Each structure stands twice: as C-alpha cells, then as structure tokens.
Image: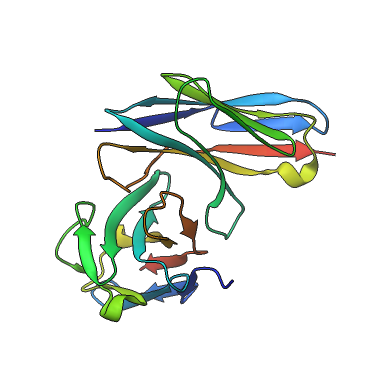
Length: 113
Length: 111
C-alpha cells in the first residue's frame, strides 16, 4: 500500500509570503495529523482531523496557520504570512479508525528567509 | 502537560557493543508509549507500542520495555544499519490520539 505522501519535500520562501503544504494520507485512513519539528526542539503536535472535521487543533501556533481536509482525503496546511520562526520540518501522519499507531510521511522542510 | 525526556542525546557504539536508551515520562493516564526510528530526511518509522508496565516487545536486535515511569530500548549487538535517531512518544488521557515526543537519541554504530 502507498504510504503517506507529502509535498513539496522542500520549500524556501521569503518572510511575508504564503506557502501551502500538502499531505496525502494512506487511502481509507480517517485520522490525519500534522506535526512539526523546529530546529533543536521536539516534534510537536499541530492538529488532528477525523475525516474532514478538525478534532483537535490545540497545537496550532497562531491564526497564520490554516489547515483543511476537503472531502476527508488529502489535507493542506497553509502558512500566511510566513515568519522566520515558522521554519522547520512539517510532518503529516495518518492512522486507521480506532488505531493509535501512526504512519508518518517524510516531511516538508520549510525555510523562511 | 505531558513530559517525555530521552537520554542520552547521542550514543556512539562499536558494532556488536550492546547498549540501552532511556525514555522517562510524566503523564496523566498513559494510554501507550511508542518507539519510532527516524533516518535523516525521513519521517518517523514505527517500531513498538507498549501499553502497560512490565510489557516487553522485540524486533530483531531491538527490545523495548516499560515501567511506570520509564521505558528502555535495548539494542543488542548493533550493526551500522541500526544508526538512526530513536524517538519515544506517549499518548495519554481519554480518547486522545495526540503524541507527545521526546527529543530523541541519535545512535551511531561504527563498523
């Protein structure tokens, strides 16, 4: 089965620009998660979708971040406008209904200059 | 807030030299403790889930154990291909799928 796919793998943007990250979960997985790791820190939770609904968005840092999951399939995470502190690696993961085990994507490395 | 602390930060081993990684945790209502392996440029790869104190799981040269306060990942007779960052994460609370990660232990195995 195909894994969790994220793109782009790398993105370099200027401060103030907008960037959209995309995640394609494993087909049929109801649960989709976004995490990020900023330099020197632990991987931190951002939010959790169950199908198209946001179940928990307690980790979203501020209102410059907007996540969507249209039709309960792929998800996008938009950062607008990007700030220097948004630089890091953004991971997406998915899991089946009732399962606590995740499958992670390879991540998108975002650099804001 | 859940806290997960991993030690050491880095571990350099000679091939065949067994060692252990530590993950200590402070959570309210542990649902599960997870071990992941992460290679450079990749996402975390699932290794084990442990649910209750006394539980042990094995996979090839890796063995994970769990107590009420910490978990150990034992690497027996490691090979260079075991070089990676090993991450510990916990899930806690009722009906909560969120993972809280430790900072990881980077293991380097020299031939």
